[in-house]
Length: 75
Image (cartoon, rainbow, N blue to C red):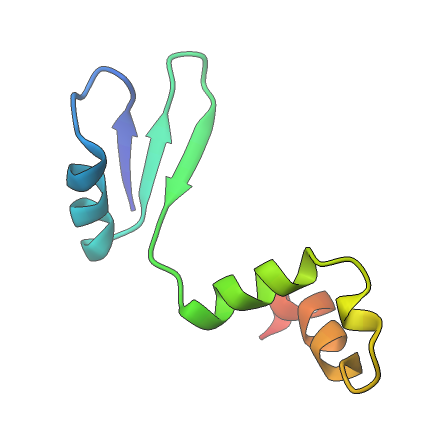
């Protein structure tokens, strides 16, 4: 993981993405706030997007997805 002091280091978004391809990036603002940039799998993004849809996971047959989401830190 690489910590970048923001905005001291003048990097473009493209520069940050290139760095994040090699390792996770943490941006630290002067006020101490931290933000992370790291690659994610498409499946992770899709699960997160679906979890934001009201009522979607309550449909029949989706209980296993709810279980996995609630226990994702263990997997």
